[in-house]
Image (tube, rainbow, N blue to C red; front, top):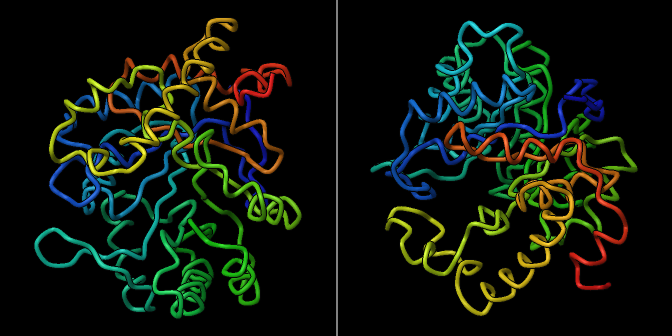
Length: 314
């Protein structure tokens, strides 16, 4: 699989990366229902076999469980894939998490991630959310210090606004940003992506298939049958009136997918990769059979006519 230079980091990454949110399992606030760890490990290993060279996880995913599964999957793999993770949401009581960007808290989280992942240094360490806002400077200073100490190789942010990026930049360069971006979530096109492109900040986008809505397999019946501990049951995007608009879009995506001989999910991911500021898309897989149909996005080139049809402008 081809690679691209990931902004200021200088890392060479594949356009598609493995997203490890869902494999965190259930029994936490944003779980996707019960997961099979063996299947999760097999999914990661299949992605690596197909050439994907980075995995994005977070301490919050399953309150550490996702990182433990990632470790199992990559142990002994050579060359080891790049490992990206996040902090800023430490575990609280009763399997909850809270928001903190305080120095001591972030350091404890980083040390915990290093231990669970079984690595000497994290390739990219990111602030998960800029919350509380008044702790952004302390949090970013802490990440810069962790990089100086060699505990992390590169530092980035997730879900930051342009204003928050500028505040962080005044302390130490922001090497990477992870924002949400999909055909159903385009807010970052206005200011955030242009800012990153202008300043050389690497961008990896999350939820390019809008948490499964753009895979072509999500129906009203399937949504109704989601387990109670799947966070999507409570999401406005999976309810009316947003759901009908999403499913109408999916029909147009399906038509383009059929034309190219690929899956609708691959088209949705490839659409995000067309933006000049975007270096990679984080795609969540939970089983090995889910990997192959989406990996095609890395080499799929959508024409202007394809895009116009998808957006309903044709």
